[in-house]
Image (cartoon, rainbow, N blue to C red; front, top):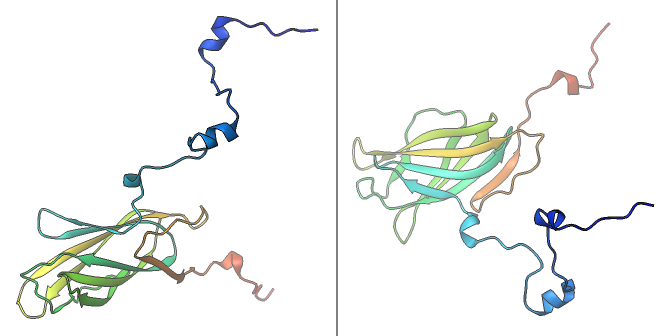
Length: 179
């Protein structure tokens, strides 16, 4: 019969547990689950002014081949004014669907975004003033796009999934063709 030996060397690298039962810990006010610092919970779309006067909009994790509606507020840009539209520069992955002035100042921008490939993606749109000629502001929308087979991301406030845009896959087709 083998017996376990206790030595001081065995205790040096181990894990120690409280001898108090979990109910006593909970009653004493010690939490029994993990809490994260509020600073770690970035749950909204972040709009970051850039040194050149443009903006970076970080929308968090998205999933490939999914279309999203993204809503964010830009701070007031006095030179741009309140009458603003998207510059007529085509971008097949992002399109602004609405720009509305906000009572507190600034603009509420709504756009549709197609997460077309995996990785850190950055799509740019330009906002132009309808009253001031040659006044424009660039908005880069940055997303971390994960493969469609690797789970479902928790979307930030201001991001809503509109649906899946699957590409045609011949292996998924029921049609067998003629032999």
